[in-house]
Length: 237
Image (cartoon, rainbow, N blue to C red; front, side, top):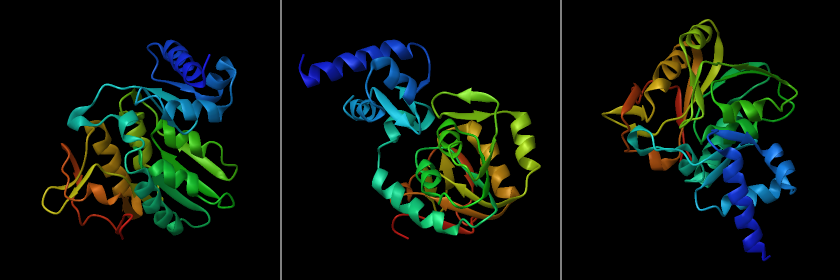
């Protein structure tokens, strides 16, 4: 069988493995298919959008959510710009900080860039961020749980919101789908709004981290004014 044929066969087997599940661990997929994690990552990149890799998980194609957002489709959009914005944002994190990291496809870059030697308490509510932070030896991870939203790979719930409101946060790093001077800062998922607003309320400093494609864009769920942040960090800052 040709290399292309072998990849196609693995992708078909991956689809069968996922079935109705939202995600599988990358390591488990590699072991079951008898190849390396790097091979699975390459297969996913060549899958034409059928799958995406988020942290240490393989995510299946998702139904689009309100505003036309689908996490698997967004993962590789403007990836270099997102990473550049996060490279600037990570410089703000200091030893023994308590930080909040928002959900989405931008801030996994931030989580991955945090220097290993930094001691942190990190608060998050998304599967992809938690997966990256859970591998850090010097991080006390607080994962806000609740109902899992498949299209955004994030959680929501009243108990989680109350837990967040009980915490003191040095720095909150927020993401957004749109930043507009008049319409404010917006996202595609309404369940994220209370969490984002609580993080802004509890943080000493709040930093909006977005790539430049988000400027001038408006999404349906508004969560803050454009001037509500300590700073707005982008790849063009």
